[in-house]
Image 1 (tube, rainbow, N blue to C red):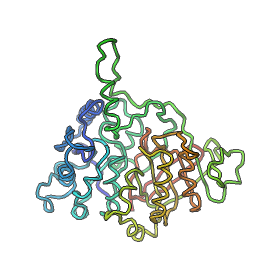
Image 2 (cartoon, rainbow, N blue to C red):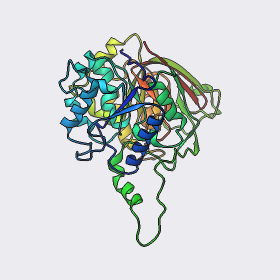
Image 3 (cartoon, rainbow, N blue to C red):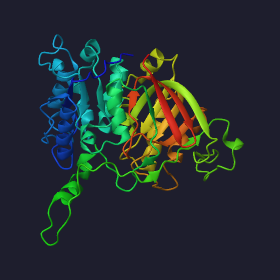
Image 4 (cartoon, rainbow, N blue to C red):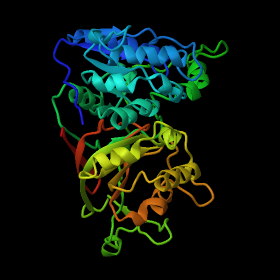
Length: 400
């Protein structure tokens, strides 16, 4: 696995929009404030041509233009005619979105693999790159916040951790204890939120409306409660049992500090909505990746955006039957955007445990990964040493 160099003090942070750009509020204001903050911190910035674009369908521009923008910053000039590689040291994307999958055919992973690696950070729709960067180019990427998150003030600890990680200042992250339940600030699914965002920011002529401050920090208001499914241990801790949602298995609550899970492996995953689209395509080289890193095994980090409990369950079944999980050492499951929804007996827990519970590896659910902030920045492709105890979790990254 190849690991990029950290961002140096005074270096240049590049921004591109291979999915949505920062063309509407509140993302426009947050992005502009992020640029101001980075400048005040002493960093230079480079903006790709699509950062403020909204001319595409489900993405900032055409798939060809988005692919060209991405290639230009990730491929060295000797390999790509219109390379802008030297103009930035690291890349943070402007957002996620809906149809970055259409950009994938225009990404030159072969040339990216032959270029010096550069950190790329983003999440949600950016799974199309962060995941395939591992699979096709053996290059680590960061599944972490997009650019607008850095425009909120003050930075939440999770945003600070993401920046420290890209600067090489930390090699470990932890859960954050509280999360934002009621006002989920999803930085990436902009198209689905576009009408609501515009309504909020339009002035109502009949009554005075106080517009929300787009730069407000996360409103973390709910205590984190991790949920566990542990192999061969469910019956040993009976005072902690929640509802039996998996026919035969017990889901344990992290409110009991005696609950523990420790496992290690190479981190791989992202947004399940996207992974199911890539599964079975010509870009699905997961089987070869599993063989290359069979000595490590895989710790899968997975989170869902638009998928409801039934579609979550179908998605996990699909990936399991495709053989993706055959070398799994454990699973980290993020809080789904459809939190606490139930449909025909399916919920966010048995969607996971009924499908993956018989694999005999630890499963830790409702972790700080994904669309309900805050989120731990995950180095996709790195070796991860996972230590979970009660409602606390730590990930130690080993850059090997």
